[in-house]
Image (cartoon, rainbow, N blue to C red; front, side, top):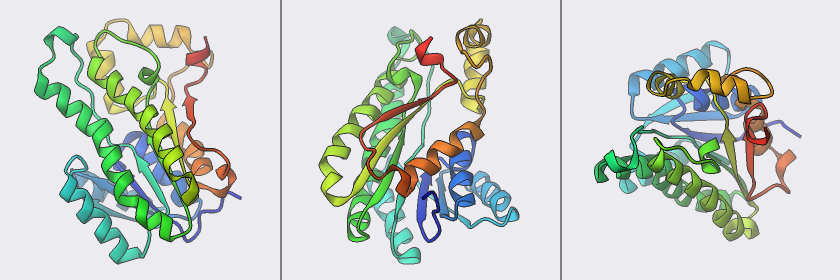
Length: 251
């Protein structure tokens, strides 16, 4: 049920953190993963680590906020592999400022990276998935898809938008046997959240106090949900937004 052998999975922002953990999980389940990022050296290192474990992976460089670059990216994937079966829209960034201090350029950077890229990549993958008889799209939201934070107006807006985009795509493409779901990671120990702990006093302690699991998550905690949502085990699951947060959102 969870075997991904023969499947091609494209993971944007897959060269580190949550993206790499998801790529690793799907590769362990048999998928060939294509890691997409702008940092070619970082992507190459990620692929090298996966290949060293006997997994199938390669890297492609692309700016997923650029429409033409996205079209070229998926053209290359189709040329090399014939299809795309799984897409993980994980590319993301955050600029932590109070909204009154956030410039329009900063707002646009966050929205384009977190939300527009998911739209562009999903649209580009749709035809190939339809021709293959179906596919799986996994969009990465956040706890801030559902909560507010004074320093994350652009980030929260983009991640809330990811959930609504997920629902729209799920309804639009259900007839094509394409399931579209979102994952809402809680407080996961990544480069992005390490910067948050540096910039937001007391964040670490507040997260521990509120999380029933009494710990920060690690990227590997997201590998299992990626395999589930990429597999036939989730064929009747679509349009959902699933928290993976150690209980943070229910406490």
